[in-house]
Length: 179
Image (cartoon, rainbow, N blue to C red):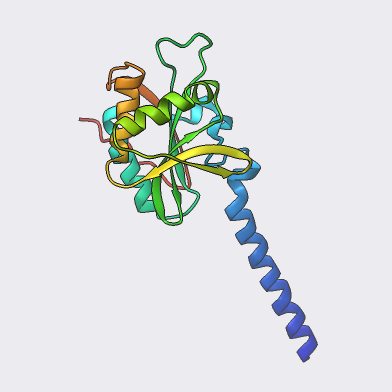
């Protein structure tokens, strides 16, 4: 083989690797799944947990250690008039797990100001962010799992044993063993 043939094969190989990496990174976006829009996940492919299990799931997310990975806990509050689910989201950005109040579902949008005030009374300062044309409010730091549990228990007045649907992207969620 001459030098030009080897160089052509090399560039085809490099282009193939870049296409694979691009596909791998964006596979969730093509399915409509992003850290700010998990709603396109089929209901029958979802898992469920109680609010007590949120810290364990967040730990699994944290161990995945990849930006863009996320988990969303979905539930319909008892006072819901339209049956729309609230989305409690945790995601990895810049290597750090954070709590995200994404403005993608009607309850999240309607309760935005009240949630920010509620979180503030608990000592959490949510900052406004934007990704994929979706606005959300984010906080990082210790005890962010407690914020999600407090929103469920104290803000929405739900029992912590209530089953929450779970959508996990980018990592394999390990369910609790049956006892």
